[in-house]
Amino acid sequence: MKRTLPVQKNDCIDVVFEDLTHDGAGVAKVDGYPLFVKNGLPGEKAKIKVIKVNKSYGVGRLLDLYERSPYRVDIPKEDAPKYGGCQLAHISYEGQLKYKENQVRQVIARIGKIEGARIHPIIGMDNPWQYRNKAQVPVGEKDGKLVAGFFKPRTHEIIDTDESVIQLPEVNEAIHTVKEICSGLGIPAYNEESHSGVLRHIMARYGRQTEELMVVLITRTDKIPRQNELVEHIVSRLPKVKSVIHNVNPKRTNVILGEKTETLWGRDVIYDMIGNVKFAISALSFYQVNPVQTKVLYEKALEYAELTGSETVIDAYCGIGTISLFLAQKAQKVFGVEVVPEAVEDAKRNAALNGMLNVNFKAGKAEEVIPKWYEEGNTADVLVVDPPRKGCDESLLRTILEMKPRKVVYVSCNPATLARDLRILEDGGYRTTDVQPVDQFPQTVHVEAVARLVLGCSPQINFSDPK
Image (cartoon, rainbow, N blue to C red; front, side, top):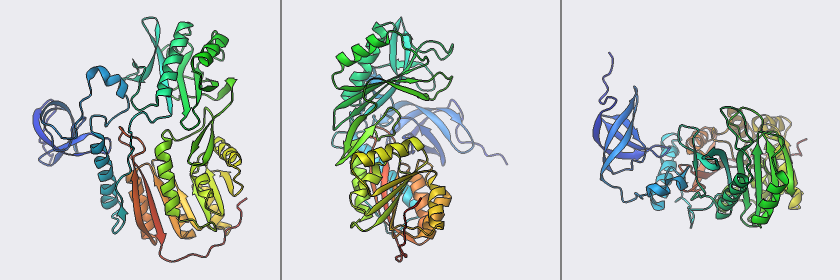
């Protein structure tokens, strides 16, 4: 028998929001049927219009608020372009932290069914604005001038903005200045419909501790019109710039960076520090966009590893070596695995930059390399994982359970997959003792967490250098 839904498309109804989804939408229910509504906050009474229905849920649009949440923040309409990408900016920071901590607690209980773990209060930022050290913005044309900013939702229309409330001021200034220079020199923007024009994106990267700036010009063409003048203007108007890079992407694609990169002026890299560790950052390097909270995150991972100086550590998904080098400060040996060969080269360069001789990096999939090491008789005292949003590969989790490191430190950017993987590890003999949420991306829906797991009994340790 076909179920009759309690609401229909285009209905206008009164609701009370009960919760938030993982992407920050308000959740209301009509006879148990969930409706997801952007900008709705728990506890608010509102009128909504139902704009979509299917068997299991509906989507609504907020029409009017009868009762407001104490956590609601109003953003003036004229300031809206500054808040691109800020899904939670309509919630006070206190409310954001409460929502994110609650999200971690809920999934650990509901998905992970973890009992007895200490889930600590979330660590937020003293200043949850102007923290991002990198921006890459699309470029277009309007009324004969260049525009640069972000795409209007569900379109390819560029909203021109000279400021983002979550970018560092130096990054905002660099994007605005380069756009202005290129417009003044008559450098044409890329047109994706006709696949013509030149300038596709402008990228700026900034070392917060070193105050070094990199500008990257991403073009469709191998040559940039009036290139020498462009570089001269950038260098003269942005005194902190240490590197001007040209990246060529001639393809019809939504991928931002192309395969060809050359340095037009200055160095190939800029430098930055996280704690006492120095990093070289190229145009293509993955580097955390919020190094202030990255330091908090990695220091917590180091604390949970409880290193005394005699341990061997494996860092799965090591990237450019950020966590590996933090661990190497306290461990006897660290072995890092990363699937992207260029990142492994960056990691090796960063180890040399810091004079760390107790770190080795290998290119390959963690779920393939680490099992092979284990088959060769190698194991570790502590294993650290920092996987992508999809979580750890099943074969890697299986190897962890076979290898039996005394501790596993799990750094997560997705609480749901963290909870899933913790359950698997607990079923295999580990116990989750602590989970520490960290707000790495204020004003957005994302939340990071670090979990510590300990094994029920100590394994035999016998780790030889992997080849």
